[in-house]
Length: 116
Image (tube, rainbow, N blue to C red):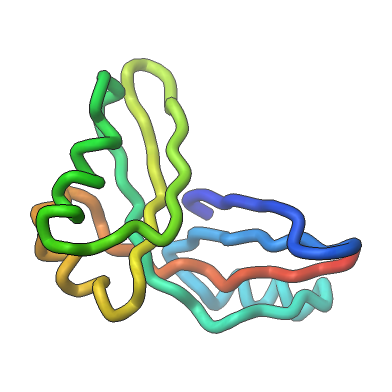
């Protein structure tokens, strides 16, 4: 697992956006636990030096191409580094990948809904 983001999605349920580099192990775990999975999404897993404006430069690159950000989460990784997961609409993914990102396009794990 590279990253995840979670939040309530209704009474007694949560949505977990799980970022993985291999989807098969996640599917096995989900089946074992009775989780309902959505179709995989694509996004970007970004890492870099943690400095003022580090995240905003990615937004600026996308804005110049007329691409909006659907969602993003960023955290300090310590030792002057940061990590970020960023999603754009599927129709914009290829253009976003060509917008000069030094990140790796990553197949994003399904959204997990569980009442457990």
